Length: 156
Image (cartoon, rainbow, N blue to C red; front, side, top):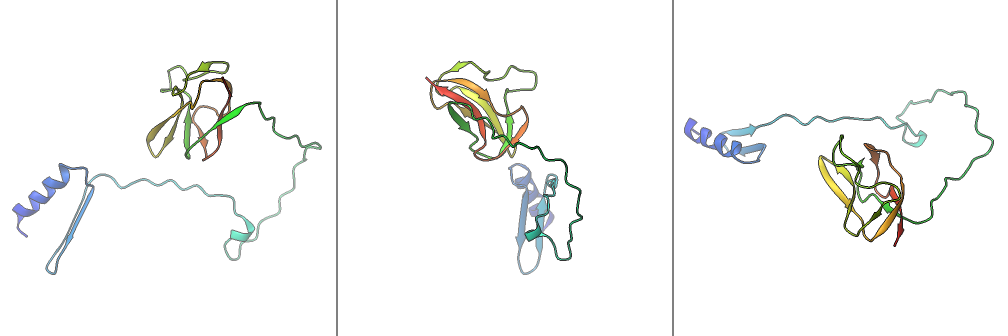
């Protein structure tokens, strides 16, 4: 492949959203990559005995004083709006802006309740019906799992 063809390939890659191009034939192999390598963040989960690596022996830790009475979580009366995806809960469109909804507010069907960010995509969570906000279950910028309750509502 001559330099003109190589320049044409580079130009085609840079003018599109392609981040990697690879061509291989019997004579030569060409790989064109652009952009930065993705940055991965790894979080270690607590080791469970059944998934512990071979030779792992947990160090015994003195137990803390347990409460004498275990209370069940208080369940608010009403329906819940649950997270449809795993992500980060945001109560407002921006850090310095007012929240989408507040406790006691009556909202209409289709009104935005919050944003759940997943993989840099902002997903607006909307009300399915006209309702009153009874409780906001998550704090701003808190991680949420699929199915986590975000709001307790009372349908009107």
